[in-house]
Length: 422
Image (tube, rainbow, N blue to C red; front, top):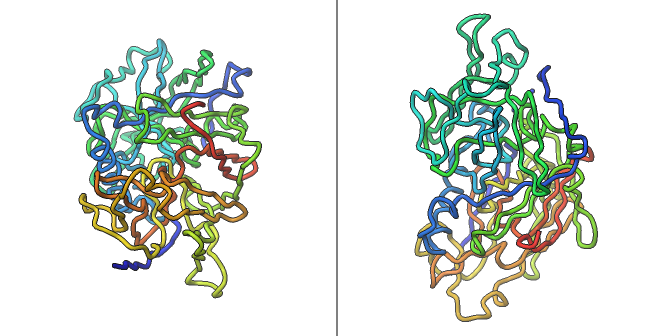
């Protein structure tokens, strides 16, 4: 049986005066752990149930308007954060976990008093117990330009934010500055004072109990990356341990000097400037499946051209949404993926076609686990799915690659790496 579907590729928010200053000049290179959310929330699930949950979150993210340039209010999608970052807020510091999201800007957590909040394992943050918590006033530039949706009850009052999502999830609360502390893997804490955060008092939706909010790692001006850009020289990277491997092994996220991606096997492609600045846009020229190269052609330009910035690289989305290839298939028992094989034995990896992603100036050769996932004992499915909107390079395709972002050079680099040994 053959399946052929045409995918439409398309592209999918600011300056604040009080940027943080740093006390640890020697912390120009440091790393933190990322923890897969399923390992915290559903330890009793088997491998196929873990995969089904991750796949369903991919479709939830894609079906809303998160990536539309017109949907400025839909900045983050809470059910799509696959990894949690451990950090601390306040003085004295209170440790918590939040979803690490390269497709978001504002970092926010749930705070007391909570009018309506989702359940979380960690205690709610209490601003009145921190000596460094300072509300952002309505008269500040930060309030005026930090987010598309802010409101005030008066010129001397606190600036309120509101973030909504296509699936009905939301966060509302106060903008503030606070000291954020990252626990570096070299045991030297990195303290970031005057960090702009959201203190959520009215939050709901598809958040899991393992997280307390969102860590925004996008390219907008209130993201963690932008606020500490002078500290990290615009460089960060991550190495994602496969989600169906050793679940207790954390993934690594690196900043500054520790984020350099170099050596044999590195493939580098440009970041294409697009709006909104939250997202990191790349150019995918085509893919090779087995011996067949499939070139991606822009529908709005000359026949042999590829649209610049036609795909978003997203560490939070599980699947890759690309034009489909023709393969003999069986049905996915979970009903989520379309292109599936029936596993025949121990050498199934050798039977599936080799896939290479051809980014502009960078050919990324994928392993079988980057391209195919087991959704049951009787199905091995291609980890691609149809999209009538944006193209997304998801985290399955990024597992066991050191993925480095250099915002000074405006590049993303890929290096094949055993992330469990990082």
